[in-house]
Amino acid sequence: MTKRSIVVLGDVNVDILMRLPDRAREGSLAAVPEPELFGGGTGGNTSVALARLGLPVAFVGMIGDDLYGRDVRAGLEAEGVDLSGLCVTSEYPTATVIAIVQPDGDRVVVVWPPRGGAHTRLRPEDLDPRQIEQAAWLHTTGMCLDQRPVSDALLRGMRIARDAGVPVSLDLNLRLELSEGTWREGQREAVEQAVALADVVLGSGEEEIVPLTGAASVEEGVRALSGGRRTAIARLGETGAFCAWPGGEATIPGFSVEVVDTLGAGDAFNGGYIAGRMAGLSEPDAVRWGNAVAGLSITRVGARSAPTRAELDEFLMRV
Image 1 (tube, helix red, strand yellow):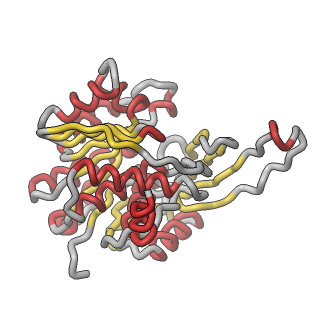
Image 2 (cartoon, helix red, strand yellow):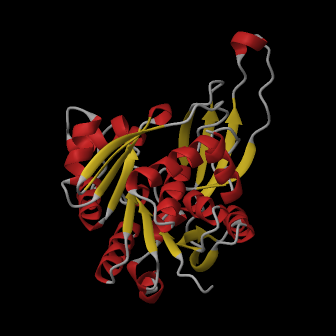
């Protein structure tokens, strides 16, 4: 490719989607639809969103040498994602995320195995420093910061990018609900190191930014994360997003859409935001792209339902 790639460093897995019937409408004997299999993982989902928006993307991570791993590879290849940095292990399985989707589109998520999936085995020495140094942007995820060696690999990748002057974004993805609201061993220290290395930090307002900062409100938490040194963005669901950056802050409204499935909405937002920044947009306008891509994605089934660039442009012209 002639253009420099966006490198996404993180996790990829398969999603098993189970949609629950609306028994209030259909009655207690309503049939449960058959489970559906999709590609997933926060890193993989953001990679696909960026690729659909027309940007060159390289994914760096690890999968298992198994059926699910081969399915993951095929899915990313079909989207045009560069997989030269994808590693394979025969010792650990590709992770599976079981997403139980409620009738209102919200979901409950279970990860299997809960610890030690293939994505956690990526090592610092598995990274190609030149790939990161030559990138247009590095995006990574806090989903991989609670287990080693992958946390060491992510932090090394962020340091390489920072030293090379490559912009770095971090989606917090704390997933504290997976450990009953408590920090897992080594997680907070790794997240704080990653935040210090990031130019942009994104996360859910109440679920991630408030617990991380200890602030009394989402807005105060975002301002604390920004600290006048970086951009901090709180995703607020249907409300939109609150963003603070050196020199400014703004609330950017979301879009009214019919919700089908919220799985992967945050990852779609990340893709839209980064695409906006790559297009030279201001922070508020890039966040608006993030809101639009997330809004379109939740009108469809699955975590990799981000729109194409043509669909995004047409949507923004209508709203």
